[in-house]
Image (cartoon, rainbow, N blue to C red):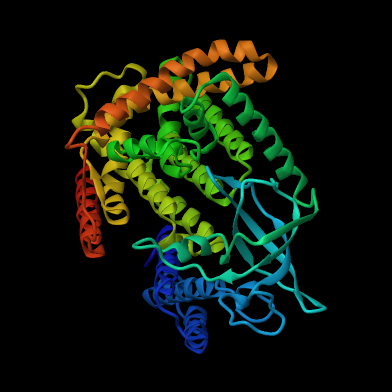
Length: 499
């Protein structure tokens, strides 16, 4: 007989495995139909919580996972913009270009010499005929004229299909956002403005003002670094700074994922408790902070997922029963995959977030008995264990995905992470002060500049060491799987000893 909690967990796990398989293999709809039908029949006529009921439930959820992924793949026909990718010249083309109307869906991604726009197509012009189309396109164009979220554009452009870039599955990365077409240097005409969501538009305007104020109270690259910490904007950081972060294993502090949110949230919780607040009060303060962070960044799906991961970890720490969080973690993962099943295999940020969350819930408590000699001042002991657990759980994936292992990740994180929450608080006060009165923001910003400069200099020194990191290109996925099997075995064995 299976308990209800076991049925929930394994059903969610079956759905996740179904999504994973469908990411590589297409299963015929007829096979899914009859498999699902057989599962329903067995469920109806088998005894609840029995072995046949268990296998039928899992097979049914496995089929749901397969179906959900396959339904996420758009039907490419004349009503979808990507149908016109790489088309040979036909009579309604001018220089093989397509003329379509679309809405700018997000903030422009401004780079040094160009800007990228995510555009949702609405209408396609074929000669004198105008027909409705759907599908998103990523447009690369000049810095000027400027375009904003909610602008309606008329675009004449040759559409091309995204392709892999070396070892990076660029087409899969764009598919996460529903983008199946690329446009380079097309002719663009703005024909309307303010057609986006009013709340999102207001948030972007507030965010733009905050970014402007940050640039007025801090020089570069400190201003861009603060932007990466507070709202995940790392585009202005020089390449050498990003490379130093990569070598020292601290890129997560400026990457909007559950990895950095959970670690920073845990650090903030420890600081609040060290200052005398109860764990429950600290929990609600961090929850409010996460909600504010999600709102101020415009609430993109990646940040909402990261926030959910952070809340899962905080809940586990507040409840104090990691074993009770297994089903919560499985259900949260299922809900995220229902919303976007492509993230399971093709979104490294989601994978890092989930693995770091597992480490913080299951591994960190078991590492505490090995760190009893460390002081508890301002949560130093817990910061060490949470950082180490996240590094251990994400190391095999990072090595596989990015072909690099940082030997200095642990010391670099221990020297940097404890002051990140403090700097976020000081930087936030500096920006708020600057919005009220610029000289006030500049005075507070000087303290933030000192902390930011410390981090930048430290990563520069550590990243310059010959042994900072080692490249491991072309590592087979089997080695990554073996690493996680070993880690899982150690956690399971340790859990049995302590239970």
